[in-house]
Length: 483
Image (cartoon, rainbow, N blue to C red; front, side):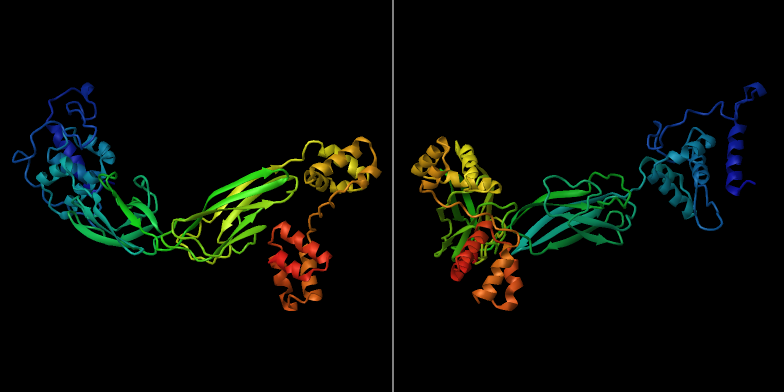
């Protein structure tokens, strides 16, 4: 069953067919024999004079029952009736689904308005009204750590835009691409009418010190269909946040060298802040897997009692005596006790410095002999290599002579240092804290677990020092080893 719109279109087809020259039935080709070639896109119109008085007068209203929802039939009735589609109604209906949305929307608005002007219909085809959002006049002002952004958003098209958002990007080296969520956003829920601009603002508070290149992008999520989607951003605008007037301790140099069996650490600490620092402590960590954090005690420390003046540097050295054989990951941390309030608390660490302590020439054969003589257990071979590295020239000569003579008695006659203590066992902190509570009475009973928790964060050298002091009955020395 044909609708009224369909009937009207058929009538237009019949009227156009009536104007053709008579042809035989063999020449009938469905009513298309004398129609002009079809344009591929309505936005590219055939060369002709712009519509004027030569166009037919207004066609009058097209009545529809219910909501106004024009389709290709109604659009083609309008444009073919106005002689705006030379290919004819049938081809118009075939091409209509491929028309651009601005053209279709414009024609639909005319149809639903109840009076269709051919002049207006021609304008829909040659210059359809569109939506085009742009952002301009981006500025930024700084007050303390607050950045205030100001910008203007405009709809340079003729149609209302509908709601959208404007994204703010605090720091980018390049324009933001579409669909990229900003660091903040300003909502424009009602959108903008055609030709209207709106000034907008946004703030960023508690901005960290630094230099920033900020951008804004209107409708970055692509909610609004625009005639130009490539002109939606503005920027960059430069923003500089000055840091507070405070000290800033950094480690400029952290060198690790060998001196025989010893490791020497040279550390240069500088205050790159704007004011002098209060007293602080520098800690050195012989071997850690991860970077140290404040309040984690190092193997050695240096106390800067007078602090450092702004711009001043100081170099200190510390030595790790007879470092154990093996690989070390060493670190240094300035202001390890957090006594200085700095403008930047995240630049106090240096490291890791990777060093490998290798056994000296002949130590492997000497330790094989010494182990056979009972000076070391088989499980203590690594300790023996460290012990061998620490022998003086005379001690080493005596030991090598005994080994060459294969005489354990001669080896035991040599004046040799005692073997280094073994590494502390995993349960060492339980023993140490129990001794401090029960025997030394230096830690209250209710602080036992706190003692264990603090002990297990200490470097191995500290724990080993406390174990040795415990074995020697030195309670005060135990506390000094740990704290």
